[in-house]
Amino acid sequence: MKFSFVNIALLASIIFCQQLSAQDVSINILGQPNKLIKNQEGYIAVKLLNESFGGLSAPANKLRPTISVPEYLDIVDVKNDDNTPLTGLSIVSKNLHSVKLLYNIDLAAGQAKTFHVIVKGTILAPVSSTITASLSFNGPQTVGNHPDNDNSTTGMEVIEEPQPVTLTDFRVQKEEASALLEWETTEETNSDRFEVQKSADGKKWETFQIVTAQGESKSLISYSAVDKAPFAGENFYRLHMIDKDGTSAYSRIRKLHFDTSASVALYPNPVSDLLSIDMADWSKASEISVSNTAGNSVYKSQGNLDKNINVKGWPAGIYIVHITSTGGAINSYKIIVAK
Image (cartoon, rainbow, N blue to C red; front, side, top):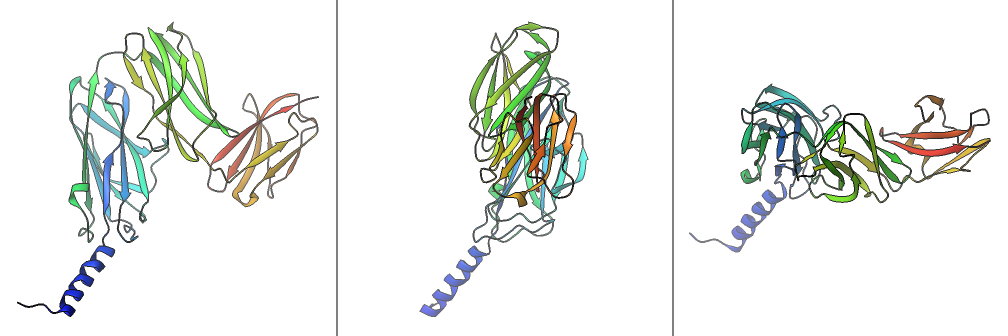
């Protein structure tokens, strides 16, 4: 059969158009702790990424990720990667060892959605069995989908060894251009140190500070660390808790977002009567509030945001100014009221 130049050009055009209309979404299990203490909770971090060629969005209610775990793990819940209630995804079905989800909104080209499947170790399993994340579609597959990207696996052990510490709280918050990390333990046995780690993508981690542990304790101990150079955009934080014999465990992940374009200045500081607030873009702020170190509110904006706050009647001391953005993010700034 002979092909004319026109036939070949037409065929090439069809193939090229198919490529442009191709839309491929991958599913991947991200790096995470590979050991879990029996009867304690951990997480499986899963990421959906639209890798489409040609800039096509994956339509809403099309993507159906399913996560399956072996019998020694129970699925407890599914949450956003910052531990807030799940958004963008709904649970279609769930039992102890499998959960099927549906992505409810468009996933634009290059956009990703990361979520955590919270699991609990119920049976000792010293050898890893397979945890699987797979992607199916509500209806036919999209043109150009690559099946090789529709599955991801990992393993996790459930062990009897105790953690070096009993971590009761781990929180992060903004302090002007820095991130303040605070945590508390109620019991420590042979604990050595905390390696405070951060990541820009939740996969590659770096230790930016090491905090020496108490070692032996059965009382409440408080710790803190400061990240003075957070990444622009998303910042993921976790604690690597290490025992003196090398046993270790990881905390849950916490997340902060730093928007370098939203610069804020508060002055004078210390202040005695009138505090002035300068902001690069006031349209990005929805609320301003102030609390004392005990957490009690002493000021909250009403209606239009005030660029000046009268602190003359406030007792001397340290106060925290909270500026809430229109997107819901809260930036906190420390001021000192002097008399």
